[in-house]
Structures are given as structure tokens and as C-alpha cells.
Image (cartoon, rainbow, N blue to C red; front, side, top):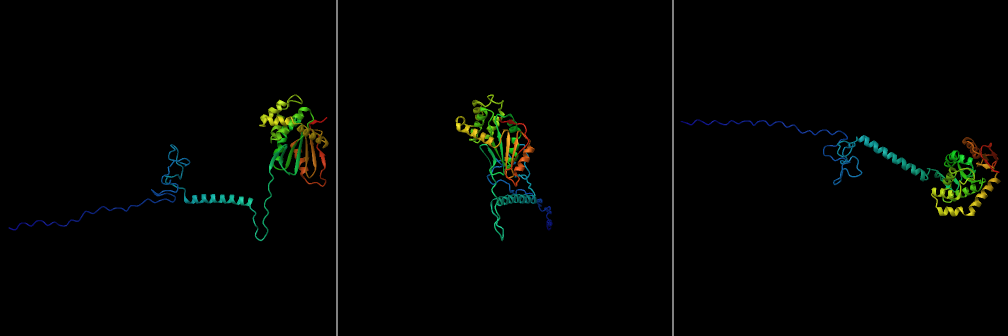
Length: 319
């Protein structure tokens, strides 16, 4: 008997493999960094994030990382960055143009070079004079350090004159000694001149007027004058040597005599000298009246040197 034939294995189709979807990387929005891509602010190899001076460091616990810092995964849109760069460049260009315009003579095509700007006179304090040298108007303040009306003037009117005329270059202001109320007036004026030798005249001037206690009542004795000098930061030895110098007292006497020769009769007196005329204001006047006198002195006049006096106001009259 023939053996039964063994069943023939029929070919079996392999099971279909599951379809594999192609990997799709997420789209990168404009201005964002793809995963793993180093940003322009990312630290260089070996650099430590959070080192001193870096904003938004990782070591700042509890602090929110600022927008656009390394590792945040976001960046300022390119358009905004471009605008920022343009603004910075424009600002730098303006600074350069301003410096060049101020320092360089620009040649005009087809013509002569443009004239450079004239140097601006500098503000300064020399002794009892303050302001810009060569100012069109000179304001002389004739005063006595013991005069009570001079004290009122120094506190109420003088600061306005210094601020609006001396500081702006419109006038040069000079304090002039008219020491006629007694020995303490002379001693105080000597002390102020000694302070002026060290560039502290106006500071010492203010301290003297703040220390008034009546005429010849001991307010300006030697010990007080030395104490005020030390308070003003002056060297004691140099100051006392100046106080003892008779030549300084002679300067005070000579300037007082000069004032009498100019017609000064009381304190305070303003003598305002300019190309237009010379104006005299006696006593404690008002800022408005002083402004009018300064304007009149500054205006060109057909008769330069003309002198006029304002109406008398409170002041200390010379005997």
C-alpha cells in the first residue's frame, strides 16, 4: 500500500507589518529655537550660567527668568531686534555728529570753511568777584558786614543776583568793602579778604552775615573770626597770619575811601556799570527795580557813562 501522501505545506503570506508614519518634526515658529539648537545668548563651552553680572542667572532662586534669557526657548522676534539695533545705531550716529559739529570746522563745498564757534567764557570766582570775566555788565555790591540792611540784602536779594546774572554770564558781581560802622566792620572785612585768598570769600561772607548780633557788640571779635574760618575749612595759621597783616586792613580802608569818592553814602548800595549807563540803587530794593537798572546799563546809549540813582530805600547811611 502506498503510504498516504504527507500534506504539502502551502505557502503562507507573512503578516503585514504595521504602517509606520513618517516622523514629523514640530514646526519652529519664527523667532524660536529648535530643540537642542544653541541660542545667541547661550553660554560658551566652559562658561558658568549665573556668574556674576549675568542677568537671569540660574542660581537666583525664586526669581523669574527674564524673557529671552538663555534656556527659555524663546527669542525676541527678528523684526523687533532689527528695530532695536537701528535705534541704537541712530543714537550713536547722533552723538558722533554732535561731537564732530562741536569740534571740527566743516568745509563748505565751493566756499571758505565755516567759522568755528567762539569759545564760551568760563564761570569762576576770584576773591570777591564771581561770574564770567568780560561780562557786559558789572554789579558792585558796596556793603558793611555789620550793616543789618546788608544782612537782609545778602539773604533775600543777593542770591537772585548771583543766580540770574552772575551764573548766566549776563553780569559780573563784585563785593566792595564800605566798612564805616566801626572796628568790627574793618576786622570782618579783613577776615573775608583772607578767606578770599584761599577761594572761600563767598562762603565766609555768608557766615559773617549769619553771625550778626548788632553793631560793635563783639560778634566779630578775633576768636569768632578764627572760629568761622575753621568752620569754612581754612587753615588756622595762614588765616591768623593774614588777620595780623596790616596791609590787608589798608586794602579795606582804601576801598572804603574809593567808595566815598564814587558817591557811596549808605549800605547796601548797588553800582551797576554797563555800556549804556551807570545806575545806582541805594538800600534794599526789589528784584524788579534791580532788573530794570541792569537792563538800562546793558543797553547801548548815545551818552555812555551817564549816572542816575534810584529812589532811596532802607539802608545804613554813612556819617
